[in-house]
Structure formats: C-alpha cells, structure tokens
Amino acid sequence: MPTLSFPHDAQHFGGQPIAQLAAAHGTPFYAYDSQRIIQRIADLRAALPRSIGIHYAIKANPFPPLLRLMAGQVDGVDIASAGELELALQAGIVPGRISFAGPGKRDSELARALAAGVLVNAESEGELLRLAAIAQERGQAARVALRVNPAFELKGSGMRMGGGPRPFGIDEEMIPGLLAGWSRFGRHLEFAGLHIFAGSQNLSGESIAAAQHASYQLALRLAAFAPTPIKTLNLGGGFGIPYFPHESALDLAPISKALSEIAADAAQRLPHAALHLELGRYLVGEAGIYVTRIIDKKVSRGHTYLVTDGGLNHHLAASGNFGQVIRRNYPVAIIHAHDAQKVGAGNTATTECSSVVGPLCTPLDLLADKVDLPRAEPGDLCVIFQSGAYGASASPQGFLSHPAVLEVLL
Image (cartoon, rainbow, N blue to C red; front, top):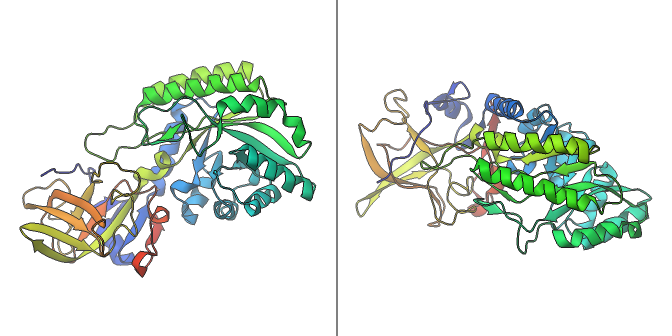
C-alpha cells in the first residue's frame, strides 16, 4: 500500500498545534495560513519583472477574511460572478483593479459590472452586443477586454482552457473582424485589451513559459486590429502546486526568463499596456488545511475504514471528484487525540492500511483510499494538506444537509 508524503511538521499549522485549533473551533474546519500566502506572493514578486502585475482569481478561495488580506497584497483580482464582485468590493478592492470573466454573464451581472466600473472580459460577440445595449440604455461606456480562445493549448495542464472548441473566450481567428468593426458599438464599449488564458494546474515551468511567449505573440498580432492601443494584457496563469508524491514544485526560472523577455519587448511594442498574471491556487493552495475528526472505525472484510465527520460535501477536490480523471490521494496525516506528540506524520512504527471516508451515503465520499496511515481511533484527527484552493466554495455543502464547514484565517 502507498505511504503518502507529509509536510515536515504535520502537527502544527500557522504556528499553532492543529489539535489546539480543533479544540478551539470544533471539526470539520479549514484553516488558512496568512503568512504563507504573504510569503508566496513576496517570493513570486522577487522572481518576476516589476512590470508584471499579479492578480488573484477569487474563485480559488473567496473566504472574506482571506480576500481582505489579498486586497493589500496583489495588484488586482479576477471575478467570475456578480456575487464575487460584491465580495471583492466588500473586501475593499477598488473597481479599477477588478476584471470580470465567465462565459455566461447574465444581463443583470453585466449591468452591475457596468455600474461598478469594472473591466468586463467579454467571452462572445453576443455578450458584447448585450453589454453595448445595456451601456447605451444607461448612457455609460463599459470597459471591455476580449477574452481570446487561442489556437494553442497549455501542454500538461490539469484543465485546458484554450485550444480547440471551448466555451471560454472568442476564437482567435474571429478577433480581427470584431476589432476592425469596433465602431459599430459606438461610444458604448471602450476597448481596453486582451485576456488570454490557456490552462491551469501546470507544473512545468517550460510549458508555461512557452504558452506565455505564444500568448504575447498572439496579442501583438491582434493589437494590429485594435481600435485603440492595448491598455491591459492578461497573460493567464496556469501555475500549479504539487498534490501527489510523484509531483515536484513548479520551477519559476523558465517563467521568470520568459516574462523578462516579454516585459522588455512590450515596453517598446505595447507601451500603454499593463501586463499581469491571473493566479489562484498557486497563491493560496498550499496555505490551507482541512481538518476532520474520526467518529467511527470499522473493518469490512479485512479492510479498515476511518469514518470522519466531514467529507466530499466540504472537500470535493480531495475526494477526486473535481477534475481528477484517475483518483489520487491528497497528502493526509493523523493526529492522535490523547497523545498528539507521540505519533506524527512520517512515523510508521504503528501503521495500518486504511481508507478515510466521510459521513455521506455515497461511495464517492472518499478522502483517502487504501493508504498506510498511523493507527487511528475515534476521536483522532485527520488532516488533509494542500487544501487552500477549491475547497469549501467548490464543494456541495448542501448535500444531505450536514452542517456547513467552518473556515479560519490564521
């Protein structure tokens, strides 16, 4: 049976014993380490050219205290709904630092974005026409960038957002015609720039660097058709984090080199454009844990099951039901309730092959499958690492009407 790799210290998080956090907050809960987030952003800024901005994709984790932290750390945020727009504004993020993407924006959402003055990343010609009509009716001009569906893909991505037929963005071959005919929108749509996002969760610095070069060259070609100089260029993201034992952390060196070359060229060829990256899980994914308590232990035909008080209703991604084709286990540790110091992560003196399952009436509710874990009993804690992104908000918390999960920022 496989043994998962663990953090160096699986007993503590955010400078506090996890057992004490569980005693203070109850289980299940998510905890996010603010210092890890701040350090990740600082390390990223040190590796990138100063002219490359960092935007946070709120969909990765919209927890309000975390958003308030982000407001002072990043250069802007990217949203995907009117609800996320309200969260961003409540967090103190000014509209000029907000961009709104998503393939199915309602008229009410477009109207709210127009009223707030945020940048709309248009995903289709139809969306442009609807937004222009709303802007005309209200006597305002909407700031618009075109989201481009590039012909290339970001190779090695967990989720491919560009290349081939996609619901996201406007096919690159359609963009020149739209830009050349921009005058039909009158003064109601103010062209601002381009948004090119090819994929996500990629651990190859070379692949990301190649996609960034391709995105920039595409932007240069399309800029020739633009009615006004490009003011903003979203080069996408795709930065991944390791979840599984065979994976290694992303090497930023190729990305740093590519962006340095792009920034130097853009200063001459796109002098009015602000370039930025759109990152989500890379900024917050490794700064979060999910903690649940074992409430039952059972053996079924020779296999041990640890039944916990939280499951896929709180952490869909860890169950393997959020984008995984072949299910694999997130890093997990056991903390013993009565002797947290005795057995920690990596101690295999007393282990058994176990599966960690949640309380839901479905075989999909599986948090760790057939792994060697320290021998555990009811009352012990199960900790799932790499849980700062696509956790609580990406999970079906209403399923079976169990209590909602608690979140805390440390």
